[in-house]
Picture 1 (cartoon, rainbow, N blue to C red):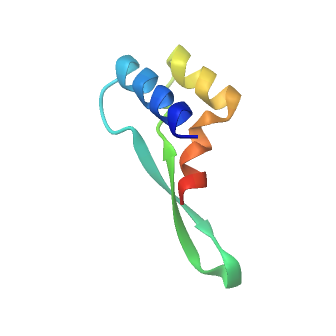
Picture 2 (picture 1 turned 90 degrees about the vertical axis):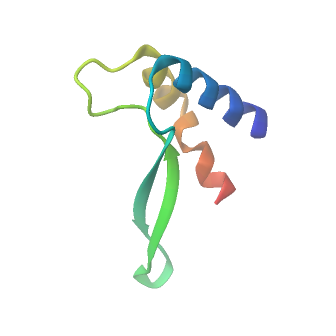
Picture 3 (picture 1 turned 45 degrees about the horizontal axis):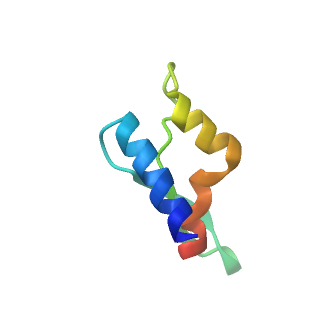
Length: 68
């Protein structure tokens, strides 16, 4: 898991600047709020970067969920 996270972080860092992780809110057990981290892949940008699109397609943007 750690090598995949490191390679994903390196690829995203080479492609764009800014924070690598973003915080996502979800409802946990008994509807308690839960904060999860995910790789930032710029999904909302009109010109999505190719590495970000590949990371989303492969599901690697959710690897930090496993660390939580």
